[in-house]
Image 1 (spheres, rainbow, N blue to C red):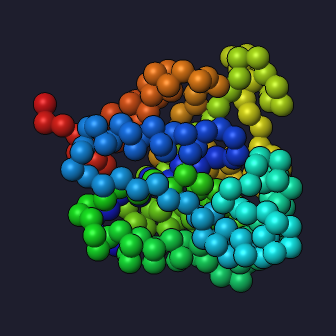
Image 2 (cartoon, rainbow, N blue to C red):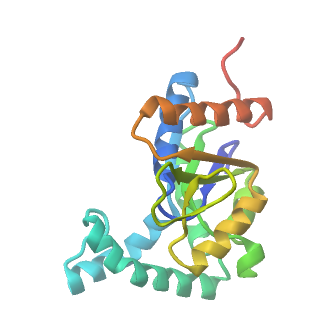
Length: 221
């Protein structure tokens, strides 16, 4: 890959990883309009592998199904991904995504920024030497851990700050999320809110961190 920057946003489900990625892309479009920003996902490749079968068997389109159908089909998607990861030692989806980047984006764009909004697996947990975290780092990338809390907790746990954090959906998520948090280059938590300006404050703080640590060029001061 060329001089692109990869940002892997990791954690468990329902903390707002895709929302954060979209807001960051919006901010970058304003701050660095000459630099292409692309949001990618490891799960996109998994959906391509399964979608024809899920439509045939269940009439479920993985690209447009409602939340309740997505929850029904999630165990099948997770099982398929686990098998693919096992036989490739964790490299199946990173290799597919790297090929897509090289063929679809790197050729067309100079120095792009790629945001991966579903970074979930670490070598320290899986035992695979070249898992997602290693792949991101090998390509000069940055890892981010994102957490979300409710002011009125539901399906969450309390800490000494009296915040109710959104909990992982299963043991696999819990184990990997914990390690991602320990190893991430940048950690942030944000509250549950529909206020875009409130959310954007956390995105701006991350952008300033990237600039300070020379991962990214900002506007000339």
